[in-house]
Amino acid sequence: MDENLELNNVFREERGALSECRLTFRPQSINFKNIKTGKIVTVSHDDIKSISWQRFATNHGIRLITKSGNLHRFDGLRPTDKDKIKAYIERNYDCELEDRELSLKGSNWGNTEFDGESLSLNLDGATALEIPLNSVSDCTSNKNEVIFSFHHNDDAIVGMTDMRLYMPGKGEDAIKSFVDQVLNRASVIKVTGKSVATFTELQCLTPRGRYDIKLFPSFIQLHGKTFDYKIPVKTVLRLFQLPHKDGRQAFFILSLDPPIVQGQTRYQFLQFLFYLDEEETVSLDMSEEELQQKYEGKLTKQMSGPSIDIFANVVKSITNKRINMPDYKNPTNSAITCSYKNNIGFLYPLERGFLYVHKPAIHVRFEEINSINFARSHVSTRSFDLEIETKANTTLIFNSIEKEEYPRLYDFVSKKKLRIKNRPTKQVSVGGIVDELVDSDDEDAYLAHVKSEGKAREAGEGDDDDDDEDEEDEDFDPNAANSDASEESNSSDDDDMASEFSEDEEAKKKSKPKKASTSAKASEKPSAKKAKSSASKPSAKDDAKKRKSKADASEDDERNKKYKSSEFVESSNDSSSESD
Image (cartoon, rainbow, N blue to C red; front, side):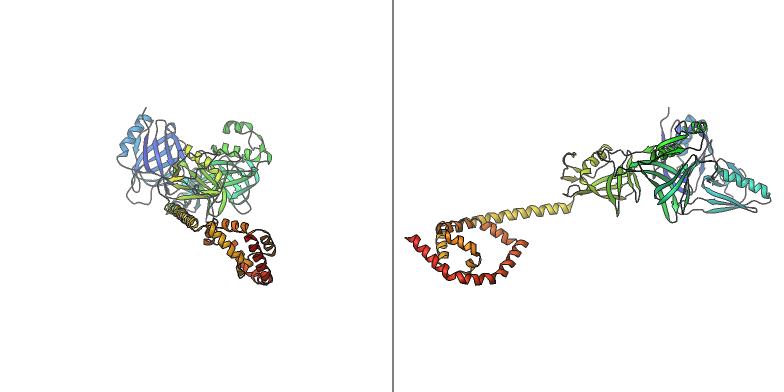
Protein backbone atom coordinates (compact mmCIF):
# COMPACT_ATOMS: atom_id res chain seq x y z
CA MET A 1 0.00 0.00 0.00
CA ASP A 2 1.30 3.44 -0.94
CA GLU A 3 2.26 6.02 1.62
CA ASN A 4 0.41 9.30 1.94
CA LEU A 5 1.04 12.03 -0.61
CA GLU A 6 1.03 15.38 1.19
CA LEU A 7 0.96 18.77 -0.57
CA ASN A 8 1.47 22.02 1.33
CA ASN A 9 0.82 25.65 0.37
CA VAL A 10 -2.39 24.65 -1.40
CA PHE A 11 -5.38 27.01 -1.47
CA ARG A 12 -9.01 25.98 -1.48
CA GLU A 13 -11.65 28.23 -3.01
CA GLU A 14 -14.43 28.94 -0.47
CA ARG A 15 -17.13 31.44 -1.35
CA GLY A 16 -14.88 33.73 -3.32
CA ALA A 17 -11.85 33.57 -1.04
CA LEU A 18 -8.77 31.34 -1.06
CA SER A 19 -8.04 29.54 2.21
CA GLU A 20 -4.66 27.92 2.78
CA CYS A 21 -4.90 24.21 3.46
CA ARG A 22 -2.88 21.02 3.55
CA LEU A 23 -3.95 18.52 0.90
CA THR A 24 -3.25 14.87 1.69
CA PHE A 25 -3.89 11.91 -0.59
CA ARG A 26 -4.40 8.68 1.34
CA PRO A 27 -5.04 5.19 -0.04
CA GLN A 28 -8.64 5.26 1.26
CA SER A 29 -9.48 8.99 1.15
CA ILE A 30 -8.49 12.55 0.30
CA ASN A 31 -8.16 14.94 3.24
CA PHE A 32 -7.76 18.70 3.24
CA LYS A 33 -7.25 20.67 6.43
CA ASN A 34 -7.81 24.42 6.79
CA ILE A 35 -4.64 25.92 8.31
CA LYS A 36 -6.49 28.85 9.91
CA THR A 37 -9.50 27.11 11.44
CA GLY A 38 -8.21 23.55 11.69
CA LYS A 39 -11.31 22.20 9.96
CA ILE A 40 -10.72 18.86 8.25
CA VAL A 41 -12.80 17.63 5.31
CA THR A 42 -12.49 14.01 4.25
CA VAL A 43 -13.65 12.57 0.92
CA SER A 44 -13.72 8.80 0.71
CA HIS A 45 -12.21 7.23 -2.40
CA ASP A 46 -15.57 5.50 -3.03
CA ASP A 47 -17.35 8.89 -3.10
CA ILE A 48 -15.13 10.42 -5.81
CA LYS A 49 -16.98 11.03 -9.07
CA SER A 50 -14.26 12.82 -11.06
CA ILE A 51 -10.89 14.54 -10.60
CA SER A 52 -9.52 16.89 -13.24
CA TRP A 53 -6.38 18.96 -13.70
CA GLN A 54 -6.88 22.51 -14.93
CA ARG A 55 -5.39 25.96 -15.09
CA PHE A 56 -6.49 28.58 -12.56
CA ALA A 57 -5.82 32.32 -12.36
CA THR A 58 -2.21 32.12 -11.16
CA ASN A 59 -1.23 28.44 -10.95
CA HIS A 60 -2.47 24.99 -11.73
CA GLY A 61 -4.91 23.02 -9.59
CA ILE A 62 -7.36 20.16 -9.37
CA ARG A 63 -11.16 20.07 -9.48
CA LEU A 64 -12.89 17.38 -7.44
CA ILE A 65 -16.58 16.43 -7.65
CA THR A 66 -18.11 13.85 -5.34
CA LYS A 67 -20.98 11.49 -6.14
CA SER A 68 -23.20 13.55 -3.84
CA GLY A 69 -22.54 16.61 -6.02
CA ASN A 70 -20.12 18.55 -3.79
CA LEU A 71 -17.54 20.65 -5.65
CA HIS A 72 -14.00 21.23 -4.32
CA ARG A 73 -11.40 23.31 -6.16
CA PHE A 74 -7.74 23.61 -5.14
CA ASP A 75 -5.22 26.12 -6.44
CA GLY A 76 -1.49 26.61 -5.91
CA LEU A 77 -0.12 23.39 -7.40
CA ARG A 78 2.98 23.33 -9.59
CA PRO A 79 3.13 21.72 -13.01
CA THR A 80 5.60 19.16 -11.63
CA ASP A 81 2.96 17.95 -9.12
CA LYS A 82 0.73 16.65 -11.92
CA ASP A 83 2.68 13.47 -12.59
CA LYS A 84 2.86 12.54 -8.88
CA ILE A 85 -0.86 13.09 -8.35
CA LYS A 86 -1.82 11.26 -11.54
CA ALA A 87 0.26 8.21 -10.66
CA TYR A 88 -1.07 8.06 -7.11
CA ILE A 89 -4.72 8.31 -8.24
CA GLU A 90 -4.30 5.54 -10.82
CA ARG A 91 -2.78 3.18 -8.25
CA ASN A 92 -5.29 3.76 -5.44
CA TYR A 93 -8.56 5.14 -6.85
CA ASP A 94 -11.06 3.89 -9.41
CA CYS A 95 -10.69 6.98 -11.60
CA GLU A 96 -8.14 8.93 -13.57
CA LEU A 97 -6.83 12.48 -13.51
CA GLU A 98 -8.42 14.20 -16.52
CA ASP A 99 -7.32 17.37 -18.27
CA ARG A 100 -10.00 20.07 -18.22
CA GLU A 101 -9.82 22.47 -21.15
CA LEU A 102 -10.78 26.14 -20.76
CA SER A 103 -12.14 28.40 -23.50
CA LEU A 104 -9.93 31.41 -24.14
CA LYS A 105 -11.86 32.94 -27.05
CA GLY A 106 -13.37 35.68 -24.91
CA SER A 107 -16.97 34.98 -25.93
CA ASN A 108 -19.70 35.91 -23.41
CA TRP A 109 -22.25 33.30 -24.52
CA GLY A 110 -22.51 29.51 -24.48
CA ASN A 111 -24.52 26.50 -23.37
CA THR A 112 -25.31 25.92 -19.68
CA GLU A 113 -24.59 22.60 -18.00
CA PHE A 114 -25.23 21.47 -14.40
CA ASP A 115 -22.72 19.13 -12.75
CA GLY A 116 -23.45 18.65 -9.07
CA GLU A 117 -22.97 22.02 -7.31
CA SER A 118 -21.41 23.49 -10.44
CA LEU A 119 -22.98 25.50 -13.26
CA SER A 120 -20.80 25.74 -16.38
CA LEU A 121 -21.07 27.89 -19.47
CA ASN A 122 -19.47 25.85 -22.27
CA LEU A 123 -18.38 26.90 -25.73
CA ASP A 124 -17.18 24.34 -28.30
CA GLY A 125 -16.61 21.69 -25.64
CA ALA A 126 -14.47 23.97 -23.43
CA THR A 127 -15.50 25.74 -20.24
CA ALA A 128 -15.78 29.52 -20.56
CA LEU A 129 -17.33 30.17 -17.11
CA GLU A 130 -17.98 28.09 -14.00
CA ILE A 131 -20.22 29.18 -11.10
CA PRO A 132 -19.92 27.23 -7.78
CA LEU A 133 -23.55 27.00 -6.71
CA ASN A 134 -22.62 26.57 -3.04
CA SER A 135 -21.63 30.27 -3.17
CA VAL A 136 -25.07 31.33 -4.42
CA SER A 137 -27.38 32.76 -1.74
CA ASP A 138 -30.40 33.45 -3.97
CA CYS A 139 -31.58 33.27 -7.58
CA THR A 140 -34.48 35.20 -9.14
CA SER A 141 -35.75 35.97 -12.64
CA ASN A 142 -36.89 39.18 -14.32
CA LYS A 143 -38.37 38.57 -17.76
CA ASN A 144 -35.51 37.00 -19.75
CA GLU A 145 -32.86 37.66 -17.09
CA VAL A 146 -31.66 35.33 -14.34
CA ILE A 147 -30.15 37.13 -11.34
CA PHE A 148 -27.62 35.37 -9.09
CA SER A 149 -26.85 36.68 -5.56
CA PHE A 150 -23.71 35.42 -3.81
CA HIS A 151 -22.74 34.92 -0.20
CA HIS A 152 -20.48 37.61 1.20
CA ASN A 153 -17.12 36.45 2.48
CA ASP A 154 -15.38 38.89 4.83
CA ASP A 155 -12.01 37.21 4.24
CA ALA A 156 -12.12 38.05 0.52
CA ILE A 157 -10.45 41.33 -0.46
CA VAL A 158 -12.75 41.68 -3.47
CA GLY A 159 -16.02 39.77 -3.73
CA MET A 160 -18.77 39.36 -6.31
CA THR A 161 -22.22 40.30 -5.04
CA ASP A 162 -24.48 39.49 -8.02
CA MET A 163 -24.47 38.35 -11.66
CA ARG A 164 -27.07 38.50 -14.46
CA LEU A 165 -27.45 36.06 -17.33
CA TYR A 166 -29.66 36.81 -20.33
CA MET A 167 -31.60 33.89 -21.80
CA PRO A 168 -33.14 34.93 -25.14
CA GLY A 169 -36.35 33.33 -26.40
CA LYS A 170 -36.56 30.64 -23.75
CA GLY A 171 -40.00 31.51 -22.42
CA GLU A 172 -41.18 31.88 -18.82
CA ASP A 173 -41.44 28.13 -18.17
CA ALA A 174 -37.86 27.47 -19.27
CA ILE A 175 -36.50 30.33 -17.15
CA LYS A 176 -38.52 29.21 -14.11
CA SER A 177 -37.23 25.65 -14.52
CA PHE A 178 -33.65 26.97 -14.74
CA VAL A 179 -34.10 29.04 -11.56
CA ASP A 180 -35.53 26.04 -9.69
CA GLN A 181 -32.53 23.91 -10.62
CA VAL A 182 -30.18 26.60 -9.34
CA LEU A 183 -32.05 26.94 -6.02
CA ASN A 184 -32.12 23.19 -5.49
CA ARG A 185 -28.36 22.95 -5.84
CA ALA A 186 -27.41 26.30 -4.26
CA SER A 187 -26.67 27.00 -0.60
CA VAL A 188 -30.10 28.51 0.08
CA ILE A 189 -31.80 27.82 3.39
CA LYS A 190 -35.50 27.09 3.15
CA VAL A 191 -37.74 26.34 6.09
CA THR A 192 -39.41 23.14 4.96
CA GLY A 193 -40.91 20.43 7.12
CA LYS A 194 -40.96 20.22 10.90
CA SER A 195 -38.13 20.98 13.25
CA VAL A 196 -36.45 18.22 15.23
CA ALA A 197 -36.76 20.12 18.53
CA THR A 198 -37.69 23.58 19.80
CA PHE A 199 -36.25 25.42 22.82
CA THR A 200 -37.79 28.70 23.97
CA GLU A 201 -36.28 31.74 25.67
CA LEU A 202 -32.70 30.51 25.83
CA GLN A 203 -30.22 33.04 27.20
CA CYS A 204 -27.59 33.87 24.61
CA LEU A 205 -24.53 35.93 25.56
CA THR A 206 -23.34 36.55 21.98
CA PRO A 207 -25.34 37.75 20.16
CA ARG A 208 -26.88 39.09 23.34
CA GLY A 209 -30.54 38.40 24.03
CA ARG A 210 -33.06 35.62 24.48
CA TYR A 211 -33.86 33.49 21.46
CA ASP A 212 -36.23 30.72 20.47
CA ILE A 213 -34.13 27.94 18.96
CA LYS A 214 -35.49 25.59 16.32
CA LEU A 215 -33.24 22.74 15.32
CA PHE A 216 -33.75 21.40 11.81
CA PRO A 217 -31.82 18.54 10.19
CA SER A 218 -29.95 20.94 7.88
CA PHE A 219 -29.84 24.25 9.79
CA ILE A 220 -30.41 25.97 13.14
CA GLN A 221 -32.86 28.86 13.38
CA LEU A 222 -32.55 31.59 16.02
CA HIS A 223 -35.61 33.82 16.44
CA GLY A 224 -35.25 36.89 18.67
CA LYS A 225 -37.08 40.14 19.26
CA THR A 226 -34.96 42.03 16.73
CA PHE A 227 -32.94 39.58 14.62
CA ASP A 228 -33.44 36.17 13.06
CA TYR A 229 -30.60 33.88 12.03
CA LYS A 230 -30.52 30.71 9.96
CA ILE A 231 -27.27 28.86 10.46
CA PRO A 232 -26.43 25.90 8.17
CA VAL A 233 -25.33 22.80 10.01
CA LYS A 234 -22.26 22.62 7.76
CA THR A 235 -20.96 25.90 9.21
CA VAL A 236 -20.82 24.53 12.79
CA LEU A 237 -17.14 23.89 13.38
CA ARG A 238 -16.92 22.81 17.03
CA LEU A 239 -19.05 22.36 20.16
CA PHE A 240 -18.01 23.19 23.73
CA GLN A 241 -19.66 22.50 27.09
CA LEU A 242 -17.94 24.31 29.96
CA PRO A 243 -18.77 24.65 33.68
CA HIS A 244 -19.17 28.12 35.16
CA LYS A 245 -16.95 29.25 38.01
CA ASP A 246 -19.86 29.51 40.46
CA GLY A 247 -20.78 25.84 39.98
CA ARG A 248 -24.45 26.70 39.37
CA GLN A 249 -24.27 27.51 35.66
CA ALA A 250 -22.64 26.18 32.49
CA PHE A 251 -21.78 27.45 29.00
CA PHE A 252 -22.67 25.73 25.75
CA ILE A 253 -20.81 27.23 22.79
CA LEU A 254 -21.02 26.69 19.03
CA SER A 255 -18.04 27.71 16.89
CA LEU A 256 -19.04 28.86 13.40
CA ASP A 257 -17.16 29.18 10.13
CA PRO A 258 -18.11 31.42 8.44
CA PRO A 259 -19.51 33.51 11.32
CA ILE A 260 -22.93 35.15 11.35
CA VAL A 261 -23.04 38.89 10.72
CA GLN A 262 -25.15 41.53 12.46
CA GLY A 263 -24.47 44.94 10.99
CA GLN A 264 -20.71 45.43 11.16
CA THR A 265 -20.26 42.83 13.90
CA ARG A 266 -19.24 39.24 13.20
CA TYR A 267 -20.14 36.50 15.67
CA GLN A 268 -17.88 33.50 15.34
CA PHE A 269 -19.24 31.91 18.54
CA LEU A 270 -22.80 31.35 19.76
CA GLN A 271 -22.58 31.35 23.56
CA PHE A 272 -25.53 30.03 25.57
CA LEU A 273 -25.79 30.12 29.36
CA PHE A 274 -27.78 27.47 31.29
CA TYR A 275 -28.58 26.92 34.97
CA LEU A 276 -27.71 23.40 36.03
CA ASP A 277 -30.79 23.01 38.21
CA GLU A 278 -33.17 23.75 35.32
CA GLU A 279 -34.86 20.60 34.05
CA GLU A 280 -37.41 20.13 31.31
CA THR A 281 -39.10 17.56 29.11
CA VAL A 282 -38.83 17.93 25.34
CA SER A 283 -40.94 16.06 22.79
CA LEU A 284 -39.17 15.74 19.44
CA ASP A 285 -41.19 16.38 16.28
CA MET A 286 -40.16 13.11 14.67
CA SER A 287 -41.33 9.55 14.95
CA GLU A 288 -39.29 6.84 16.62
CA GLU A 289 -38.62 5.22 13.25
CA GLU A 290 -37.29 8.45 11.74
CA LEU A 291 -35.10 9.08 14.77
CA GLN A 292 -33.72 5.57 14.61
CA GLN A 293 -33.06 5.83 10.89
CA LYS A 294 -31.44 9.30 10.83
CA TYR A 295 -29.71 9.47 14.19
CA GLU A 296 -29.10 5.77 14.93
CA GLY A 297 -30.89 5.78 18.29
CA LYS A 298 -28.98 8.78 19.70
CA LEU A 299 -32.29 10.63 20.18
CA THR A 300 -35.61 9.46 21.59
CA LYS A 301 -39.15 10.77 21.18
CA GLN A 302 -39.36 11.99 24.80
CA MET A 303 -36.26 13.46 26.45
CA SER A 304 -36.16 14.59 30.10
CA GLY A 305 -33.39 15.96 32.27
CA PRO A 306 -31.28 19.11 32.67
CA SER A 307 -31.88 21.64 29.91
CA ILE A 308 -28.23 21.88 28.92
CA ASP A 309 -27.87 18.10 28.53
CA ILE A 310 -30.93 17.83 26.29
CA PHE A 311 -29.90 20.80 24.16
CA ALA A 312 -26.32 19.52 23.85
CA ASN A 313 -27.45 16.03 22.89
CA VAL A 314 -29.77 17.26 20.13
CA VAL A 315 -27.19 19.69 18.69
CA LYS A 316 -24.50 17.01 18.80
CA SER A 317 -26.70 14.54 16.92
CA ILE A 318 -27.71 17.05 14.22
CA THR A 319 -24.22 18.46 13.58
CA ASN A 320 -22.44 15.12 14.10
CA LYS A 321 -19.73 16.89 16.11
CA ARG A 322 -18.09 15.84 19.36
CA ILE A 323 -18.48 18.05 22.43
CA ASN A 324 -15.19 19.42 23.79
CA MET A 325 -14.85 19.42 27.58
CA PRO A 326 -12.16 20.95 29.84
CA ASP A 327 -9.01 18.87 30.30
CA TYR A 328 -7.71 20.67 33.39
CA LYS A 329 -7.29 19.07 36.81
CA ASN A 330 -8.52 21.48 39.46
CA PRO A 331 -9.94 20.36 42.84
CA THR A 332 -12.68 23.00 42.73
CA ASN A 333 -13.43 24.05 39.13
CA SER A 334 -11.80 23.82 35.71
CA ALA A 335 -12.43 27.52 35.00
CA ILE A 336 -9.49 29.89 35.56
CA THR A 337 -10.56 33.42 36.40
CA CYS A 338 -8.57 36.03 34.50
CA SER A 339 -8.98 39.14 32.38
CA TYR A 340 -8.32 39.87 28.73
CA LYS A 341 -7.73 43.56 28.08
CA ASN A 342 -10.53 45.28 30.04
CA ASN A 343 -12.89 42.30 30.28
CA ILE A 344 -13.03 39.73 33.07
CA GLY A 345 -13.75 36.17 32.00
CA PHE A 346 -12.73 32.53 32.30
CA LEU A 347 -9.94 30.60 30.62
CA TYR A 348 -10.47 26.88 29.98
CA PRO A 349 -7.55 24.57 29.13
CA LEU A 350 -8.94 21.98 26.72
CA GLU A 351 -7.62 18.77 25.24
CA ARG A 352 -6.36 20.52 22.11
CA GLY A 353 -6.31 24.20 22.93
CA PHE A 354 -7.37 27.11 25.14
CA LEU A 355 -10.80 28.76 25.16
CA TYR A 356 -11.55 32.11 26.77
CA VAL A 357 -15.15 33.23 27.44
CA HIS A 358 -17.16 35.15 27.23
CA LYS A 359 -16.34 38.62 25.88
CA PRO A 360 -14.70 38.23 23.49
CA ALA A 361 -14.64 34.47 22.96
CA ILE A 362 -11.15 33.36 21.92
CA HIS A 363 -10.15 29.84 20.84
CA VAL A 364 -6.47 29.03 20.35
CA ARG A 365 -5.45 25.58 19.17
CA PHE A 366 -2.17 24.06 20.35
CA GLU A 367 -0.91 23.77 16.79
CA GLU A 368 -1.28 27.54 16.41
CA ILE A 369 0.87 28.29 19.49
CA ASN A 370 4.52 29.17 19.08
CA SER A 371 5.43 29.64 22.76
CA ILE A 372 3.93 30.33 26.20
CA ASN A 373 5.31 32.72 28.77
CA PHE A 374 4.39 32.87 32.48
CA ALA A 375 4.90 36.58 33.16
CA ARG A 376 5.29 37.96 36.69
CA SER A 377 5.33 34.44 38.08
CA HIS A 378 8.70 35.09 39.82
CA VAL A 379 7.50 38.29 41.53
CA SER A 380 6.06 38.17 45.04
CA THR A 381 2.54 39.09 43.97
CA ARG A 382 -0.78 37.31 44.27
CA SER A 383 -1.27 36.90 40.52
CA PHE A 384 0.61 36.30 37.28
CA ASP A 385 -0.02 36.69 33.53
CA LEU A 386 -0.22 34.06 30.82
CA GLU A 387 1.17 35.21 27.47
CA ILE A 388 0.43 33.05 24.41
CA GLU A 389 2.46 33.84 21.31
CA THR A 390 0.96 32.38 18.14
CA LYS A 391 2.69 31.44 14.91
CA ALA A 392 0.90 34.36 13.25
CA ASN A 393 3.09 36.75 15.35
CA THR A 394 0.23 37.80 17.63
CA THR A 395 0.36 37.70 21.43
CA LEU A 396 -2.64 37.03 23.65
CA ILE A 397 -2.19 38.19 27.26
CA PHE A 398 -4.46 36.88 30.02
CA ASN A 399 -3.92 38.91 33.19
CA SER A 400 -4.57 38.53 36.93
CA ILE A 401 -4.48 34.74 37.23
CA GLU A 402 -4.29 33.59 40.86
CA LYS A 403 -0.82 32.45 41.90
CA GLU A 404 -2.12 29.13 43.20
CA GLU A 405 -3.06 28.17 39.63
CA TYR A 406 0.54 28.46 38.46
CA PRO A 407 1.78 24.94 39.37
CA ARG A 408 -1.27 23.22 37.87
CA LEU A 409 -1.22 25.35 34.72
CA TYR A 410 2.52 24.82 34.32
CA ASP A 411 2.08 21.04 34.59
CA PHE A 412 -0.74 21.16 32.03
CA VAL A 413 1.36 23.08 29.50
CA SER A 414 4.33 20.78 30.06
CA LYS A 415 2.24 17.64 29.49
CA LYS A 416 0.92 19.08 26.23
CA LYS A 417 4.57 19.52 25.15
CA LEU A 418 4.17 23.21 24.40
CA ARG A 419 7.24 25.43 24.24
CA ILE A 420 7.62 27.39 27.48
CA LYS A 421 9.58 30.58 27.15
CA ASN A 422 10.70 30.85 30.80
CA ARG A 423 11.38 27.66 32.69
CA PRO A 424 12.03 27.44 36.46
CA THR A 425 15.47 26.38 37.70
CA LYS A 426 13.79 24.07 40.22
CA GLN A 427 10.92 21.68 39.89
CA VAL A 428 7.49 23.29 40.15
CA SER A 429 5.04 21.58 42.48
CA VAL A 430 1.64 22.35 43.90
CA GLY A 431 3.06 22.56 47.41
CA GLY A 432 5.37 25.44 46.62
CA ILE A 433 5.92 27.92 43.87
CA VAL A 434 9.47 28.48 42.67
CA ASP A 435 10.41 32.14 42.39
CA GLU A 436 13.62 31.73 40.46
CA LEU A 437 12.90 31.55 36.74
CA VAL A 438 15.33 31.72 33.89
CA ASP A 439 14.25 33.11 30.53
CA SER A 440 15.50 30.76 27.88
CA ASP A 441 15.31 33.39 25.13
CA ASP A 442 15.63 36.88 26.56
CA GLU A 443 17.10 38.06 29.86
CA ASP A 444 15.17 40.53 31.98
CA ALA A 445 17.63 43.42 32.06
CA TYR A 446 15.51 45.51 34.40
CA LEU A 447 15.25 42.69 36.94
CA ALA A 448 19.01 42.13 36.88
CA HIS A 449 19.59 45.86 37.39
CA VAL A 450 17.28 45.97 40.41
CA LYS A 451 18.95 42.92 41.97
CA SER A 452 22.44 44.40 41.53
CA GLU A 453 21.31 47.69 43.09
CA GLY A 454 19.85 45.84 46.07
CA LYS A 455 23.06 43.88 46.64
CA ALA A 456 25.18 47.03 46.39
CA ARG A 457 22.93 48.85 48.87
CA GLU A 458 23.10 45.98 51.36
CA ALA A 459 26.90 45.85 51.07
CA GLY A 460 27.16 49.63 51.61
CA GLU A 461 24.99 49.55 54.70
CA GLY A 462 27.06 46.70 56.12
CA ASP A 463 30.32 48.71 55.75
CA ASP A 464 28.79 51.76 57.44
CA ASP A 465 27.59 49.66 60.36
CA ASP A 466 31.10 48.21 60.89
CA ASP A 467 32.66 51.72 60.87
CA ASP A 468 30.12 52.97 63.39
CA GLU A 469 30.83 50.07 65.72
CA ASP A 470 34.61 50.73 65.59
CA GLU A 471 34.17 54.43 66.30
CA GLU A 472 31.82 53.79 69.21
CA ASP A 473 34.17 51.22 70.74
CA GLU A 474 37.08 53.64 70.61
CA ASP A 475 35.16 56.56 72.11
CA PHE A 476 33.60 54.61 74.94
CA ASP A 477 35.44 54.97 78.36
CA PRO A 478 33.75 53.98 81.65
CA ASN A 479 35.86 56.46 83.72
CA ALA A 480 35.02 59.25 81.35
CA ALA A 481 31.38 58.28 81.59
CA ASN A 482 31.52 58.57 85.41
CA SER A 483 33.08 62.01 85.24
CA ASP A 484 30.57 63.11 82.64
CA ALA A 485 27.74 61.85 84.81
CA SER A 486 29.00 63.82 87.84
CA GLU A 487 29.41 66.94 85.77
CA GLU A 488 25.85 66.57 84.46
CA SER A 489 24.50 66.09 87.95
CA ASN A 490 26.38 69.16 89.28
CA SER A 491 25.36 71.43 86.42
CA SER A 492 22.41 73.68 87.22
CA ASP A 493 22.27 75.45 83.83
CA ASP A 494 21.52 72.37 81.65
CA ASP A 495 18.06 73.38 80.39
CA ASP A 496 18.01 70.68 77.74
CA MET A 497 18.11 67.83 80.25
CA ALA A 498 15.36 69.38 82.28
CA SER A 499 13.10 69.76 79.27
CA GLU A 500 13.35 66.02 78.39
CA PHE A 501 11.75 64.71 81.54
CA SER A 502 8.30 65.10 82.99
CA GLU A 503 7.47 65.64 86.64
CA ASP A 504 7.18 61.92 87.39
CA GLU A 505 10.50 61.15 85.70
CA GLU A 506 12.20 63.88 87.74
CA ALA A 507 10.93 62.31 90.95
CA LYS A 508 12.27 58.89 89.98
CA LYS A 509 15.62 60.41 89.06
CA LYS A 510 15.96 62.10 92.44
CA SER A 511 15.26 58.88 94.33
CA LYS A 512 17.97 56.89 92.50
CA PRO A 513 21.69 57.02 93.47
CA LYS A 514 24.20 58.56 91.15
CA LYS A 515 25.88 55.22 90.35
CA ALA A 516 22.71 54.07 88.69
CA SER A 517 22.72 57.30 86.69
CA THR A 518 26.31 56.61 85.69
CA SER A 519 25.51 53.07 84.54
CA ALA A 520 22.49 54.37 82.61
CA LYS A 521 24.75 56.87 80.86
CA ALA A 522 27.18 54.10 80.02
CA SER A 523 24.43 51.86 78.68
CA GLU A 524 23.33 54.63 76.36
CA LYS A 525 26.73 54.67 74.68
CA PRO A 526 26.52 51.27 72.90
CA SER A 527 23.11 52.21 71.54
CA ALA A 528 24.64 55.14 69.63
CA LYS A 529 24.75 52.95 66.54
CA LYS A 530 21.00 52.46 66.62
CA ALA A 531 20.37 56.11 67.24
CA LYS A 532 22.70 57.13 64.44
CA SER A 533 21.07 54.78 61.92
CA SER A 534 17.60 55.99 62.90
CA ALA A 535 18.72 59.60 62.65
CA SER A 536 20.14 59.03 59.18
CA LYS A 537 16.77 57.78 58.03
CA PRO A 538 14.08 59.99 59.64
CA SER A 539 10.64 58.46 59.67
CA ALA A 540 7.17 59.88 60.02
CA LYS A 541 7.09 58.79 63.65
CA ASP A 542 10.27 60.81 64.43
CA ASP A 543 8.80 63.90 62.77
CA ALA A 544 5.68 63.57 64.88
CA LYS A 545 7.80 63.34 68.05
CA LYS A 546 9.73 66.46 67.05
CA ARG A 547 6.57 68.44 66.45
CA LYS A 548 5.15 67.28 69.78
CA SER A 549 8.33 68.19 71.66
CA LYS A 550 8.31 71.68 70.14
CA ALA A 551 4.67 72.14 71.04
CA ASP A 552 5.33 71.09 74.64
CA ALA A 553 8.53 73.14 74.91
CA SER A 554 6.77 76.29 76.10
CA GLU A 555 4.90 74.38 78.81
CA ASP A 556 8.05 72.58 79.95
CA ASP A 557 10.03 75.84 80.21
CA GLU A 558 7.70 77.29 82.80
CA ARG A 559 7.61 74.03 84.71
CA ASN A 560 11.42 73.70 84.64
CA LYS A 561 12.00 77.18 86.00
CA LYS A 562 10.09 76.25 89.15
CA TYR A 563 12.34 73.30 89.82
CA LYS A 564 15.72 74.74 88.83
CA SER A 565 16.65 76.09 92.18
CA SER A 566 15.35 73.08 94.13
CA GLU A 567 17.03 70.61 91.76
CA PHE A 568 20.39 72.36 92.16
CA VAL A 569 20.24 72.22 95.95
CA GLU A 570 19.19 68.56 96.04
CA SER A 571 21.86 67.48 93.59
CA SER A 572 24.56 69.26 95.61
CA ASN A 573 23.48 67.51 98.78
CA ASP A 574 23.52 64.13 97.03
CA SER A 575 27.05 64.63 95.76
CA SER A 576 28.34 65.69 99.16
CA SER A 577 26.76 62.60 100.75
CA GLU A 578 28.52 60.37 98.27
CA SER A 579 31.89 61.87 99.00
CA ASP A 580 31.39 61.28 102.75
